[in-house]
Image (cartoon, rainbow, N blue to C red; front, side, top):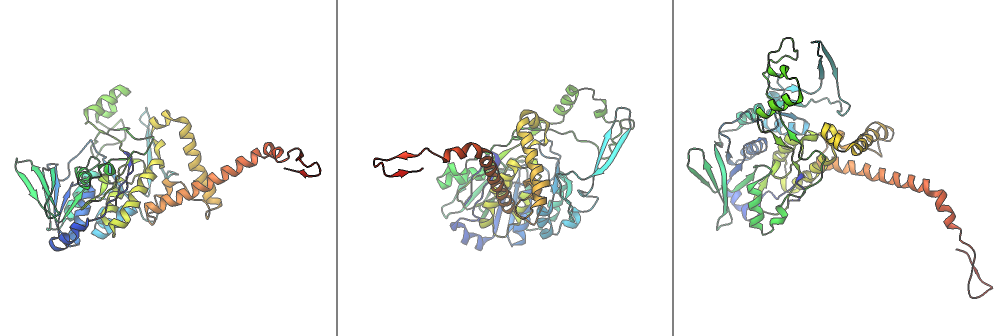
Length: 434
């Protein structure tokens, strides 16, 4: 069953197949994946490894275009690398020609006089790791996934999912419109909804189940929900030196000019909320269709790849999807100037909580207290559900300490209440002390 969360952060989980689909899938082993993003391609690859003939429907006209309305870079960490390990892609992912390792960070400041200041550092928010994560452009990562698909996977570019129908035998008919004007109709034994936050697959599941409310996004509050993301694509050989650079970015003289350049570079997109859904249908939901959240914790692509690699989807997807949305809700929402300016008191509280957990309590009493969730999520040996449970245990213990401290502080005022004047009852010989 899927669990609902919210539209600010999102989480959901569904059974891998409805009972009516189990026999069909075993006999036919055909699958349609709606959506050719990282979640859809990763799922298609895993299904192909398990013997399915897979058709991927992708409305983009080409495999890996530049998309300014989407995140430009992905950080593939240990969780995402569980999938790349299984798919045999980790070696190519780690190639310097493909990605950049996250073990070393170089901060470069370009000063008005043309001087450059560089320093290598590891931000305190990050934990040292023997296994690096890898920064890779979205288009390059999609190309990597597409190149790994076997012949049993057919990708139809320019094919947009238009409608889904239930068939009399308990199956589903998939209808897609193709860019050449034709119509594609498929009746797979398994349908995978990797069609994003506004998933048509999820919507139809709600209608077929008769419980549409269970498939409606449930919103969790997050300070960074709705922030605008915008980027300018730079040439690969751009030098961070105004004396030697010809890119027009160096000619910008004001915030207004920068805003105009950003507006010309594309529409951009707004951060999602944390969301999820619940219900039952003969369908699998993966990626943003089952859990969506702002990019605060760097887990968007990793959670999508984890969906594809789950060995027992029905049992594991629900708690994982809910947990990653909950983590994103409190992970690192005050890294953006706008959220800090909007909520200075909450920002101060978040940083105080982060410092207390990460650098004080977890160091002094590691058996009782854990670091903040944004640090725990960097430990790929932990599932998202384990990260959330661990963070919540520390929260409850901090609340207990806070309550004990409050009672101790109030004790001088509470103590006089224990001594009540001596009271006479109806029999003068009896005295009762309260």
